[in-house]
Structures are given as C-alpha cells and as structure tokens.
Length: 204
Length: 204
Image (cartoon, rainbow over all chains, first blue to last red; front, top):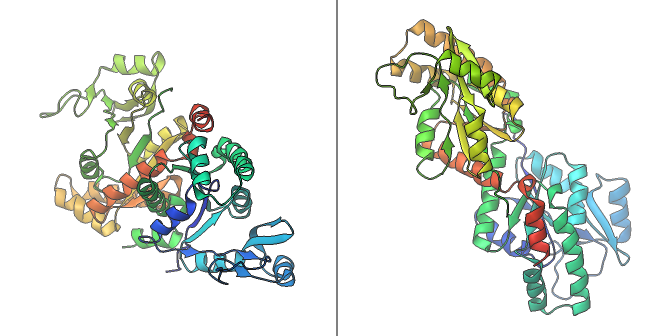
C-alpha cells in the first residue's frame, strides 16, 4: 500500500509561552521530524550548524527561493533571512513521517496558506501577566523589548480563531497530553483515508 | 463567563460493528448525555420507556415534527417513526454538556446537515468478513437479512470520507482511547474559543 502522508504540525505562539519546553517533552513519546530553519545570519557562540539553524549564505538562500522548492515560510529581520525550506518537509511527509515546525505566528500564517493540510496549534499563555513574568524571568532582554513582545502577543492571542487548535500552557504536562491527543485524533481524520484502504476493507 | 457549548458527538457505523460496546466502555470515563430516540412502534418484552426508547404515539411524534423543535434526524421503517428529538440535545449542549448520539449512517448524515458543529465518528470494521462473522455470531437474524446488512455496510464504508473521523474497531480498548483523544482534541478546537475567554487572557 502507498505510504500514508505524515502530519504537518505547526506549533506557534508568543515568545516565552513555552513552545520549546513542550517540544522537548513531546519528543520523548512522539516520533517526528523537527524542521530546522535556515538563516543567513552569523552563528553565535554555542550555536551549531544543523542543530540550532542551518547557516547559509545569502546566495544559497536566494537560490532556494528562486530555483529550489522554496520556503514554506520565510522572513527578513534586520537584514538577515530566516526560513523553513519546503524540500525537507515535503520529503519527510511523503515518507509518512510527522513533521513539527516550531515557528512564530507570522510564519505559521504563511504555512497555513502554503499547505492545506497544516495543523496549526497555538500555545496560549494563562494570561499576559504570566507571560510577562516568564519573559522577565529569562532576564535576557531589556524591559522595553519585553513590552514590545507583550503588545505583539496581545494581537496574536486575539487572532486565535485563525488556528486549528489552541492549547493553554498553564501546565506543561497537560499541554503535552493535549498535543498528543491532537496528533492521535488527526491521524483518525476521515480525510486521510485512502481509496486503497477502503477497498482493502470491503474486499476482505 | 457564559457556559461553553458541549460537543455533539455522533457515533455511527454498520450494525454489528460494535458501537454499543464502545459506548458502554466510553461511559466509564467520559461524561455525556446519551440521547434516547423516540419511536412510535410498540415496545418489545424487556424494553423500558426512557431506557431503550421513548415510546410515543403517532400524534405525539407528528406534533414534535410540526410544532415542537423537531428532530435532528428521523426516519420511517415499516410504518413506524424513529427519531432524535432536537430539544433535549440542544438543552444539554447549551448547558455545556457533551451529547452522544449512536445512530445509523443515514441518520448521521441528517444530523450533519442539521448541525454544523456535529462531530461524526464512523466506526469501521476490520473487514466485511469480520463484520459478517460478528452478525452471524449474534445468531439473531436469517442469513439473507445479514447479507442485506453487509451490502449496505459496504456502501457506507465507501462513503467514509463524509465523516469527520474514522475509528477502526479491531480492538475495543484502542477504539475507546481513539474516541477519548477525539473528544480531548475537539475541546481544544480554536473555533470554540469565545471572545470572552480571549479578553480574559489579554486583560490579566
């Protein structure tokens, strides 16, 4: 029988909402291909090529946009390109493997347009105050930048209807179980049944 | 905060596929209102009013069609009416309680038309041969009637794409877990988020 296409899971939400932690927990029970972004920016100390990003030249990035399969989503920040290349994702999906993207909301909306079967999961903070506490707790950014992030998060939360699922992250364990249930339910979507599978059942 | 609407779960599939057994198992962990059908046929020995059916007169049934809230689905078999009255289902849903209907495929398709948010779950047999074995094992019907049921089941299986989910019943425990995952995932549907909930999050 033809290989059944994998699920394309797009986990998104504000900075500080806990996407990374959820992904690390999810990895313990779920098999999926985690798509690593390409970027044209310089690697920072401690960052490894192929782990944190694929570090590419501007020429390589532009060649992929114009002559390769392109990007499921890409954006430019302060002169650097960032993006999710389509080729690797398509390859894994067609081999039947689930793919997880962990990306910003803007990118998730691009993936939604590019891929009909993308499953957008929005991770919701319990409140903006709680999100602020988490960002302040990280102590990696000045308060002014945090306030900008919160203002952006507010707008994203108010567009939550654009996503397919919304998972509240007030408890990591429960949030992970929620996503496990989403994956299990999505596998059961009747749209995923192939004519071959149906024939198999009625002919035996 | 306004009560969040319950989920309307419609479990359907061929006779003998195991819907009743799955429902009994599901009852142990999930709270839902199980909608009992109305019928105008005579009760059989052992059948209780309000348990197996609500036994109604033809006048009562017709009054509900024409002057009440009507039926989510109804049909006539050999001169008797059968149907799922809408009023009780709507009342439970608006109180935030999940509702489960266990009905025939034809009825499920009527509910799909009547209720946008109905979640149709098709229970799939492992094969037609296995379904035949189960029906023969029940020993309640002549072979000729069983053959008719199988021919009907074949047609229903081939229209599986009409449903939202398709759960294979080759193992009751796994099928029940599948439905539990569907219920959990459906509760997380972003469409179910109310503006009130979103305001609650951004204002705190």
